[in-house]
Length: 180
Image (cartoon, rainbow, N blue to C red):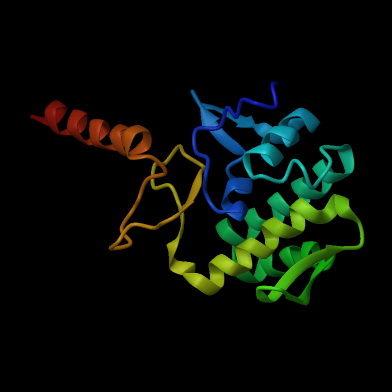
């Protein structure tokens, strides 16, 4: 897999949701970007983390742990996922700083291989603090993707109107015409 090509159907979501979207369904089969360090390199590059963190086995292992923790928190119960997300967050911290531009924050990690996993878990906390009701799973029954609803009225239902939304509309249309 080339580090330059990201095969996922939905990219550009906030880091936590982008990590969840490293697993998707294509033609009925589950695809997984994070099966090896090449896929990890693609994900790091897509999120601007490739210059800061190595695409190695330890980073991949920690990122998979974070993805499972986030999935438990987002798709399961918050109580179930909280302990798992907290276990990832235990591997880093925010250090307050003063810069020439004013106050700042710098993430610090005892082990840099936890960096991407920790940043994704921390981003999930930011999304929860910003608008927890805008963290959504695609409404299409065979889609496993997630998105942060940035629509004005907060009614987005599909990861992609062109793909999942269109499938749902076509399915409803077929059902109506079949019954008629």
